[in-house]
Image (spheres, rainbow, N blue to C red):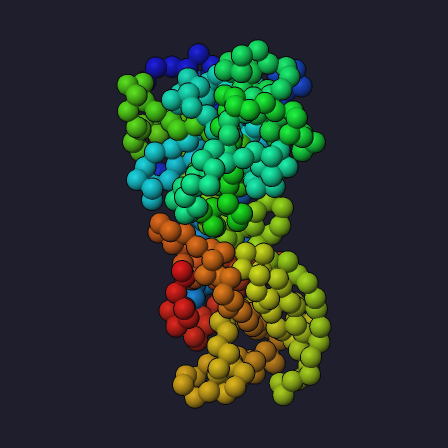
Length: 426
């Protein structure tokens, strides 16, 4: 592989064998304006430092109808670590790679449009085909009046990128094709105060309007690019281009891994980003939001209820415990079954099991998490290729609720309904 003339940037990569992010992130320098991260191994230092992935409690909850220990799993810790390392790089103006194994391989180089400079834009042109797109949310495309490239014949299926008419910045550029000019156009697109008159059409940068909901709606690289920028805390407009080899061929997994190691940039798997969104939210909102607390009188005594709104499905979930309970040692997750829970249908045992679960709350060390099902679940987490599934969505919801309640470890009891009993994800 030919060496890139530009060796600066965020020197972090994810080592799957060791499950850690390797490299040392440093804050942007005042004069350099970019993030510099030096790899001790490449610098010839005797002891390589590691920055372990951040550990979060309750990242994965078993629901398989039995019991298990509620704890962080190494796999999910690694997913969180690599996504957040990538977001750190984006916020510093450095590139990341998004790889979608489910789509048959291939990868895109991604940059924050708001933070990109001429150096990294030129680098992106060098390592891609040179065809760069600007992924942006619907509200940005509408505000800037970016019409569809294909007019009324557009195929609105989820498999099709929604290309818009190409643009250039209306000022501050020359011909529009240089790295400096395309960087200027990218920053105009990311400027929240930009207006349609700040752009000329056609131009040399191709906007792509992404679907609302990001990778949970459409697991494609443009959606992943905007999701990562939003999580990174920068405007959700990203520059992307498909990575190609020096001979012009599409890259394989080996090339992507070598490329990441050589340039010291993180690689984010699409499936890891989907998991991050399901467990952690979209960067602006968490997966769930606590909306109310109350005390209710039941046949099992007075109980405390904490209501949550699911920011992915729109459902309202409830955590129930004894008032003042602080040491929770067992968590029961119950997936709603309206016919049995509410109307007492005898077609299954859900209603009686729920009553038993409520009775166990008298101990003061039990917590019941009641998860609601809504039609939105079938659309809000839809993935055409390799669906994350209802179980994964419920895991993310329960983990977010437990994290909000400060529960780090507890015995868990799976819901009695069984995730397969509900309607499948469409």
